Length: 332
Image (cartoon, rainbow, N blue to C red; front, side):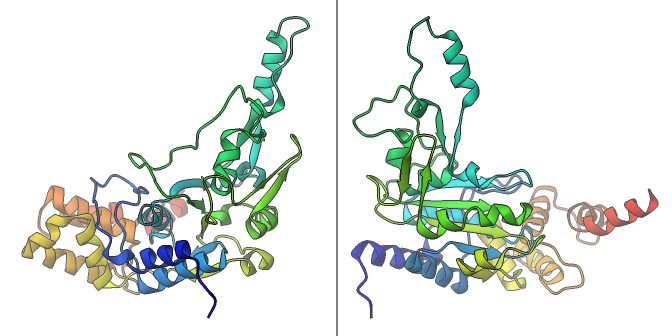
């Protein structure tokens, strides 16, 4: 067997025990991404461990609302790592993950500089992207300048998890919904994600993992809803896990984690169980995990009879959206 460093061994142990991490449920409004509550399956735990060992990105594929994005924040809290995220759109560029230059600010400062005065160096206008922060937060804070160079505009790592201050020397980076972009976006990330380094030609500086505060390779978690096929070369560079929709038993477990009142009330637990059996994966009336939790939230707040007309309306509002949209589009 390969010798494992003490640091990596500690991370693997922490991941192995993720299912026992104390949960901190918050009032649920919309899609929570704060990593405070999660129910990791054995498959997810193993996939995270493999990604840490290999240094490869973990690509999670599955339907919307099944909990792919929420995993990243939970893992960051578990490992006490910094958390960064980037949500992909059809207009995203690979460089958005690396760095950008604030050319407007530089032009403004050049115009306002006194005659004969010096314009601040280009480093002052480099805005490090989330992958730069994940690989080498020390050089990102200097905007790529050498340690001996005074930077007029030092910057701080963006905060993507509220009320969370990590202590560990590592990072979890979420690249969310990568299938929203064209294949050129994935192809532009092959080298930075594969080699954990890239070059910034604007300032002729290299960025690589292993800086002052990042002795561990960052864990990159990527999600896809399958709207577009990803390039084969990109998929080959990832650890890939298909995240299946939960069955009724797991839905009950997830509801109990998010809403402790459910576990404390036998009547509520029974009704949640009935909902779970109706809306589990494979059932005729299927709901995503997020939609199921919305139903439980409404049930706890409004109460009411499960057979009432009002509750039937609630289910149409929360779950039966695709069929409603289809009929509306047809009538239009």
